[in-house]
Image 1 (cartoon, rainbow, N blue to C red):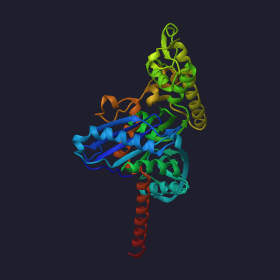
Image 2: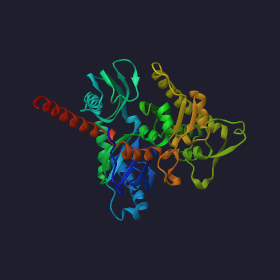
Image 3: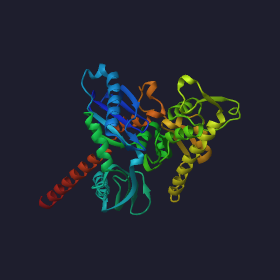
Image 4: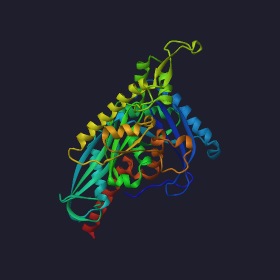
Length: 423
């Protein structure tokens, strides 16, 4: 489909709502080709979300407003007092469903046109129960002409039939109504939705990885999601309901300290793999229920802390491996993994992932927006950066655009047939 670009000077924002923190990136289009510059960054601790679900609309609304306000303050010189309106919102991967749909079209020995692809996407859209779910993405892959094998790009090729695999991602209407309603109460308009793991892939992966194949693992606070990219697009996604906050909870229980102290200890002393020096290094653990003034702490070896962290991280990767093994029964998988997300930053994470999944691993961070501030260029900001890239370069993939194009195509085809019959 023809790409759609916003005009130079227009302003858009990405809002990444996670279980641990909210991130807002405000960007301005610097040309008519979808290139962006970041003019505002804001991030705040998330309130009102528990176990991936909204627990308090009021608290979530307040934390969203604080996040957006921080980004607007940074962008004040460019926005010149105009309030932010349009935002792209992430859809958490523990709230979405994905499916692969096969659509078959009869071509009658005609050349494949973009109209045919549009019709196939519309057919996939119509198979979704729209009373319960809303389509977030429908991504075509795996074109097959006359059942003789896959082709990379079928447009212009003559065939009798076209089989098209379409990867659909949907979310429950109730969840979307709640989260979008909360955003709109902050006087913001949600102009696009994008799944978190797809956004992270757009910001972290290089072109060769997307074309040749790779697995992206996005480690968040409440869950860990993964997606498989191949032949230029995402062909599969999955998630496990365990993330960085579960590691923090394990530390709090294992060391008998508060969740706040556990998060601090994890950040300062945590690691994914025990080394020979960890038994000799002692760390201070504030006793639960004691005031800060009492200075009562327990001294424990760092190896005890890592002994709590490592099994939980191994569990995450083993659960991912089970899903990957199930998918790979019918398809070979890439041996390359890219780790990203806020929970991926623990020392040794790359080595542990490589050991459990037996694949090459690199750490991913946003690389396709050039002027990201240093404070917003780490793995924790991959999703937010990817949301901007999705809106800048992938508007043609949005369900509204797909339906509109398919309807236009249908009307045009009817007109052409009428013209041939009557003239």
